[in-house]
Image 1 (tube, rainbow, N blue to C red):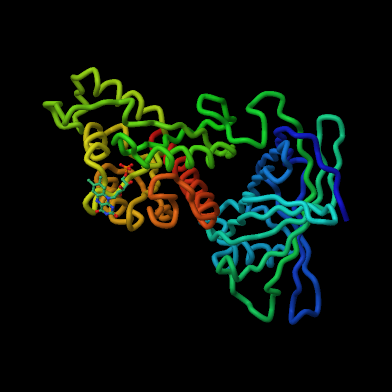
Image 2 (image 1 turned 180 degrees about the horizontal axis):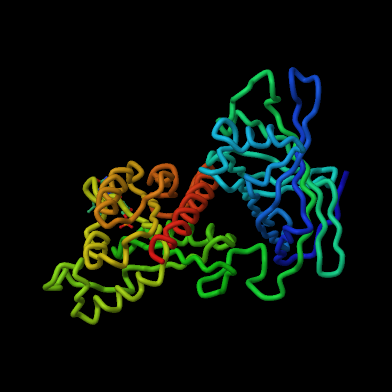
Length: 373
Ligand SMILES: Cc1cc2nc3c(=O)[nH]c(=O)nc-3n(C[C@H](O)[C@H](O)[C@H](O)COP(=O)(O)O)c2cc1C
């Protein structure tokens, strides 16, 4: 079935008028269990070039209901969804395509029970009603891919999902389909800095950091901003008191501290110099203390061998600063992700990895806000 292409724009999903239904085979395939989840929130960005469109949605895992209270308790328990530990079920698209028959497919990542796995939604209906979109989409989810393997034989492995979505156009905001530019306003209250950790003339780091900001631009979960250390020139640490005392004297320190204090999370983009991070980034980190505490961080490295050793050192540094660092990292090789070792052309496999990094970082950055509150 083909679906109408909606007009370009940003649309906010209306959870009250949307529904996620599921069905799964039960008891050796002898019956079908049906039920649903409630959506919490979501956005649909319809781009001028349809393939650049993006969808993101979060469902309330504990809203699982199948009409049988005992079964619902079991599905919410640690055996299945573990909804206390993992209250959200999330979807974020990584690419969109229209096939030769005009059928829309959204490729993306589904997070259930804290585990991400690829999923493909086929859009079966799309209708524009004034400022609103009405969409229907289906997908098949393999619960084993999310580590949910309990009751094999008793409960089916594959779960069929039917999403019926109503979304309303958001009047303001950046035009959809292209990454938001620096300074443009997102809807999120979460701010993440992409810290460019090299200042060398002719540095490769600029291409890498720009790519990260560009990939992050289409996201609605956080507002991302490039913070280039070249714009914050700091001498070798020249503060008399330890940064943990917060008695900053120098104007350069106060400017740097005020900038870092703006953010809930950081992506450190680091080169590998002599099996570690750059001196300029280490120095900039050492200048501050409280501004880093109880926030979240992720790392992106590059180097002849990908720069993983620089990230390992940064993880130790971040731990000392009470800066919670997520597992997912990106490492780019000068040999395979750059042309002539200088023009950044990352291999395609990094696209999906970047989405995982953004998801992990945003969720920890959001959670840690409550620690600082
Ligand atoms: C001082 C210095 C030391 C380096 N040491 C390493 C290293 O230990 N391992 C590695 O894989 N690459 C190493 N490289 C290569 C860099 O990772 C690569 O040149 C990268 O582009 C540097 O980042 P930048 O261009 O943003 O300054 C080194 C480069 C420099 C300038």
